[in-house]
Image 1: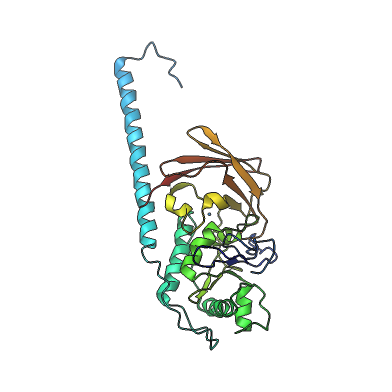
Image 2: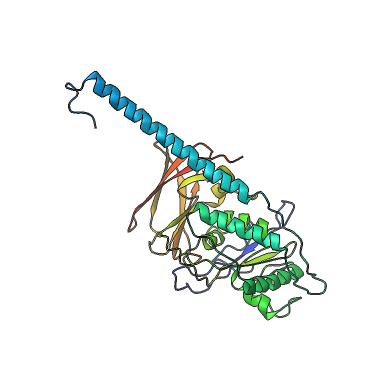
Length: 346
């Protein structure tokens, strides 16, 4: 696992299992604070008028007025949508505190994270899902407890492992079982959610993000010490049923969502995932104001939160607030087209 010079060692992990019945298999595997194990690689650690001559000036004026009104309505609707998005973004991120951990590494006491911190982490998960028009999820007390044991084990050993050996300090079967079903991070629970969504270091899967945006997600488990955390994401009973999900998603998106952590979505890649459309051979075109913007496309490993997925990384350009990016996926069974309108939410 690589040490990152960011003032704190960050690491994420997901373990690969056979694909789930919902079409989204397991999360991938390991460590990814922008460095180590990538998910799915090695484990350890979102008309012109034909009557021009007959048209009178009055007709022409009327048409102009109608066009003006339409444009005005469109602008108003867009502003309203942007306000809604920014209000939600800022409200849900007003409290990102990690609270306190009641346990102890020294006595192998898993304790518990503050209830407020668990609420903060869950609220961030649901914020990202709301932006993608996916249903919210709840947490589960039993999974929370297992994830507390998981977080303790990671902290006690200063490492991330989906299959911790019985020789590990503070080993418990409950914690080991949770580790095999979770995103794991060498960062506390609230901070980890943003990191999962950027998902640095996992270019072949971007599995952490895909699990948070999975159709099958929920309920989840969240456990954390002051430095390590685990989030149970596998084997959910969710049934969102989205034909496809993109990150960044269609519609208004805060520019702040592109760099919520130390890395950027432009660096790790925009993604589209689906349980029903095979995306691996998709061609991707991104345009802004009619000009094509180059991207590097990667077919992602299947079974990490979705049956199929691709990523595309901006090549020589960066996302900016105030721009609308049109994304088109072709060469697949059902073409996908959508606009991403980037807004500033100070």
